[in-house]
Length: 157
Image 1 (cartoon, rainbow, N blue to C red):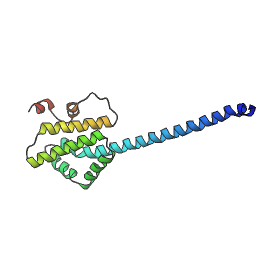
Image 2: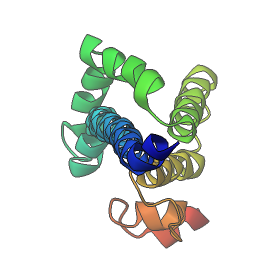
Image 3: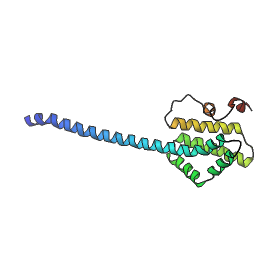
Image 4: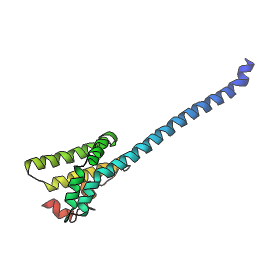
């Protein structure tokens, strides 16, 4: 019994150290995986947004043609596939809604630019939330103000 009292505290310290090391190692692995996922998400989000940014940057000349060419490319399709794998649920849903509206408008010939702009703003907002601004107070219109000139009058039309 005396030997238990002598080595008990030392054994508990060693056991506590081992448990502490295991927990710390596990949390560091989790943190590294989250960082890697976030980096992959940002890369995919940038690839998905690229044609639309090109479109807004050059509306008058070749911006629309370049955007359409980029959207139909293999690389863009691959980025869209990666979005389904690495993107957050809300970003994937917002992107799918945007594409569904675009396909529907193309098929029916009835274009609704206001709805398209709101869906684009919704995608930007969900990406913003996904990369770390979960409690943002911005809305879809706030996200569009940097890319759409005279947004308020465009929304009234």
